[in-house]
Length: 260
Image 1: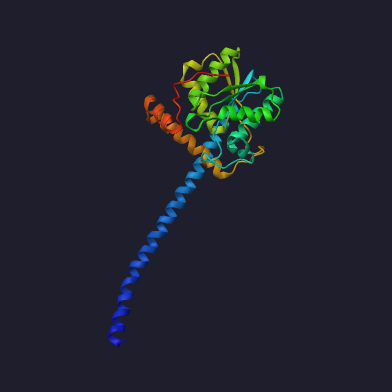
Image 2: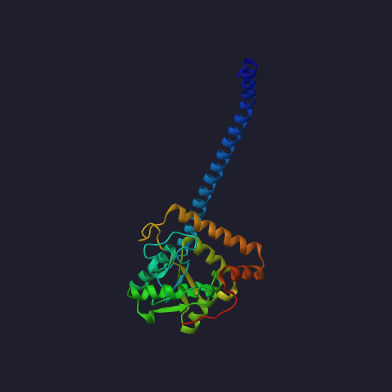
């Protein structure tokens, strides 16, 4: 290579350096901003969790005629599988809830359990019936477990479960779910006069003492799922919301009645 050409290549490489430097600086800025956003999001999740926990514990109940165990999901539906998920296709979160319900029954804090929700007609399976099967295999008597298998969202869980309670002559219930979910359930109960006249108390499982310990990732998913559900309820009309649930789960929240 001749000297003039070498000089030309050197100057050309020098001219490229500022551009590379700018790209690196821009990349650093992007990484820092994303890290700050992620850190802020995690911090908000923890604050929201703490506020929800404070509210739920303030409305916690010790005893009732029955406990409603809210279905959360099957294994593979957006969260980690529990240790026993392959047996009944129940997610780790659902297993936490159903185990807590069984504890309430075994310690005499409730007389019966209502397994509610998880209606997936497209998949030909029922979360409520899967929970009832798990309870039966773990010692719960069949006459102590009521099945509400028509629901596919929180509002229809409450509507159909309260209808079943009236049919059975019960008027008090402990509500078994995660802390963020229970806080949202409380909002639904407060906003709909159809749920007045019954005694509703919270009964969250303890994520620290659960046999299926909760990871930070699961906590993050729970909180964001709750935020999304609240946003959809706030932004969509009832018709739009019901249509969305029907498209996602193949189940119309307005349809169905309590079953046993």
